[in-house]
Length: 438
Image (cartoon, rainbow, N blue to C red; front, side):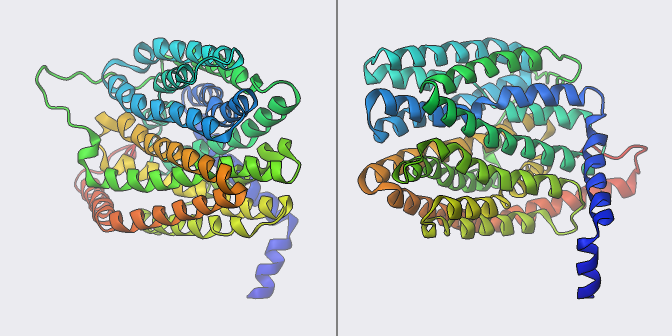
């Protein structure tokens, strides 16, 4: 058995066939009506999410001279995003993506330009916080907008899982190239270059994405006085959101710690490439994960992924050099995208279709809240104890994430199991001509 497995693994034809199967799986979903167009535009629209945070840190550190302020301003942007995104998502569900997000994205881009100008002019710190918060509050959640469109064009659960895995891979690809561009341009050209580039992506991506009306999810009309409770009334959504806050805190602290780590090793320009290794691991796992079917229940896949992520993050403190840190970050990154894919799929099972955008947005919002907390805590510890102190924050946040996952797991297991049984009963009573969307 071991010999045959080893032979198969070393067979170039077998590997080529596997690659073709993986590629064809994604090609099939991209061939759905309008899919590749909104997917590409959504990729451009999401580029700022990997540029703004680290670019803000680089710009404020260069103009004001300390990581505490840099981390705090970056956190203010994320806090604004965390407050504004769910509100915008509820409006999107009832008024449409284009109607709500076109003016909102315009304001976000203008605020970001003003932030750059204020930093270069060495404006009062309150101005930095105000502009960073406004820019974040009006950006919304592009990932949720794209995933909501996928839910309207796919025809099977397998297609939805593949599409969400592909979106997770795109997210990670953004985080591979974004930090590299931000740090290289920020250190070699000008500290403000990353934010200027983010404005360009935001503008082009917004016009391209919102201009595609054919795949925009239908507007949901509600009668006057009809109750419209938030998805946070569902304990499963709350449990997932709390876990995501812990995960986000780990990521936020890690960003600041890696910047400090590379500076301590005399290679500040390598902060982006190091963070890219983290995203590269996740990108690799996303492509493989979305190309195959999984028989294990979602709740179990989700739990295993969270624990594996915490175990991997705990090794960051052991790295004493850039190469070792890059390797452990790549390995740990393998756990990220599959876990995020499972979370988004769980949301489609436990949230009403009429509130899907809001449900997906709360996941990204929880991650952003955690990221802001982690960036602020990490920046403070880095100023006090260097990169070592920052990585301690990463480890603590990682295990807080695990604790929060364990607390919410029993209810999540019951809800997802019930949803699957109800779907099977529906199919048994009235087999559809076409498989259900979710």
